[in-house]
Image (cartoon, rainbow, N blue to C red; front, side, top):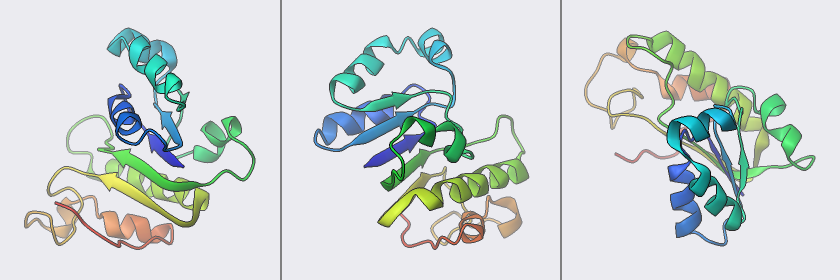
Length: 160
């Protein structure tokens, strides 16, 4: 089972559902269904996701999965992979708020991973503070490894 959190217009979730038709997918947005429909005109995307067997949920907070996602799932549901693409706190110059956001996500997601489960988070170049990122002062990054460590997670791979 793959959980995709914070997929604004659900386009990534739909691409995954098309590419991996046998995958059990839970696609979520932070926004309400009404907002997604009004802003993105997502009726067709949502319909196709559901036709492909995906569970589509709205109003899901990636930092509070236990209260905003799991009530819609079977008890003791776990994920083999939880994906959060390009998380960000609104506005520029919000490094600490973005650190808080990804740390909150890691802490929220970690308890729901299966025994072999993992988290995939996509960040823009330089944001993470990893060895692959452009040279940047550690203090000017989101310090993704430190945020994950708070949740007991380890960085296992990096892809540029």
